[in-house]
Image (cartoon, helix red, strand yellow):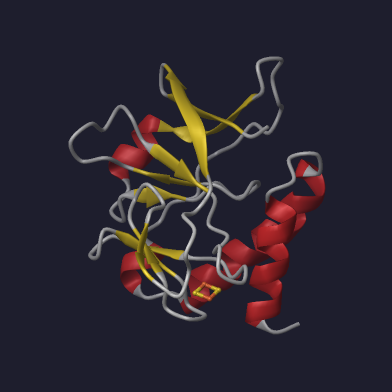
Length: 159
Ligand code: FES
């Protein structure tokens, strides 16, 4: 399976929170693939430790504030669901959570800290840290998730 097909598949599967364990095996491969193929800036995106148990309130723990604050890339990509947490320099206690599936044709966007933007490797669309379209061809923003913190834990509401 080539990289583009794999990333498209991951994006589709990743939005489903009902299959967290099936996703885990695939996303580990994605993380390994990304670590080998991305420039240094993007390799610094840390993988956050996860508990993928969904809670009664619909929130899922996806990472830690300390890992996000320590990330050289300014973002972390939890490995088991399709969420990228982006640090807000003006308010490090309130990260944003974005689904990295591009709204153009479904490739997985990549966080570029130097640009302070997500860039799609397929057709070069660009999105700001909150998922808003900065440059086409994508016309719709990236999906975002409600985020909350509890101590050092960052949680997102998937459903
Ligand atoms: Fe992202 Fe086309 S799939 S710009």
